[in-house]
Every structure is written in structure tokens, then in C-alpha cells.
Image (tube, rainbow, N blue to C red; front, side, top):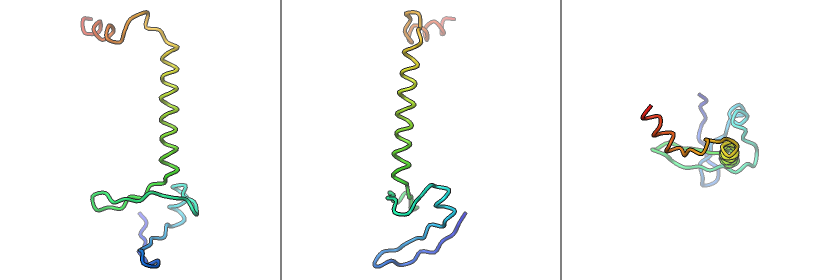
Length: 88
């Protein structure tokens, strides 16, 4: 865990992000981030990373839907299969 010192920047407080932390997180100079408090802790989130995660999830969902359309259940519904499994 890296420790840093909080400093003053005008009327605000500032934290310098060490190079190794910035590199590991993919943070770059001038990038916009989201900051919030959560149970007394400070949470900094990269907006670009959040957007990329959402795109990845949407792409995965589209792939699952497309794959499911290519498969046949032989005219049975999921409910039929569940009921069959319970009897079985």
C-alpha cells in the first residue's frame, strides 16, 4: 500500500497520485475522474474505466443473447425443462 500526504492547492486539498499507482490503474494526465465518500472513505473512480466496464457488459449480454438464439430447446420452454428436472 502506498502512502501519500494531503497538501493544499488553492482553497482545496490535493493528493498526488504516485506514478506506479497511475500506471497500474491506467490513469493519465488530464483524465476526468469521479470522487465520492463511502462510509468515511474516499473513492476515486476513473470515468473512462466505468464506461468501458459498461460497454464490456453490454457486449457480453449481446453475445449471450445471440448465442441463445442459435440454440434450440426442441420446442420446450425453460419452465418445461425445470419441471422435467424436478420430476426426473
